[in-house]
Image (cartoon, helix red, strand yellow):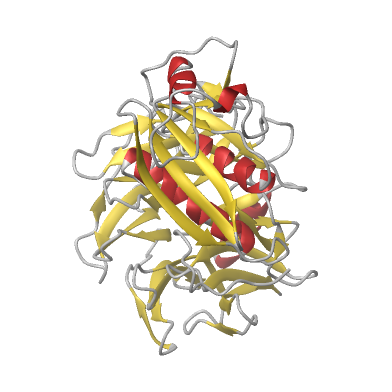
Length: 443
């Protein structure tokens, strides 16, 4: 593939489009009077109360989005009303165990406003006891940290109830109108990160959430830029100053950036040390084939990537130093076509990617050990998948709503929901969970 052809491909990435086995779209939850099937997932209710309405709504929504609970919602009622009276446990604040248990709930989440913050309590209704509680200090609702702190609390409640934290305290990058934007996992707090008037693509998060990398296109070429979120300082990655460079990705330790570099010799995967800003190294040898879209395994020892060495683009894997290159996802000649945009799961067990089926991209998973391929979507156009830090959800681009938007699928149940953005979206990238030490770019 010539550099001109790859540039065309890069620009096409900005205009590429994207439905899932799509068993159901997200609902507001299970409401009193609406039939549901308890027992499939533990029923969970966020107890009504007064005050901190925005916190209660965020926690309820975050717990719903984990897809680990059968959400039971009731209208918010004043504390002390009929719904709050009944069988309670000593030392609790009066949660009506009998009522919520009769509605199919196994857990009740109670949020109580306190001085400068909130106390979260998880009641195990089946065991009839208060299981866990935690008091947190919340910054001002006007602070950039407020929403993240509430998301972290919701993730902790999810861990109490299921043993696995949620992914609410994370964010996504995506491209719209040539700019890179950042948005919370629930679709709120949309913020542009790159200047208007420039053309950017292929954004990627650093593991610590403090930096992003992306391609900045201009004059028929594109360098890889690494930019800090606090202050916006940036530099061009060594080895990417010339020609066209796309699809950057960070290693799990954040020291290395892998990317595809295209020049007269072909398109190959390079790595560079972005801490010392040196040491560009080529891992593949093009020679009549193109290699691009690298993604590191969670232990940093392997890289999955796309190559055209056998014809149409397909998914390969190699050691992080470029050795031991082999096919990862089996070919399916005649049934499917080109494969693109791989992303390695946080647990290392699978790689998600999109592959052409009847001239339409669909989302697939491949089991890394067994090499079995499973199709996640089946109708519409679906592409550019990216894993949530919980290893259970995948964000991707779909045009099912009439324009290209970010959609999220639960890979265990097929349940999907839309993450709405004002304009068309491209090329999403999901961060890891963001800790309290992570700098935040103020709006």
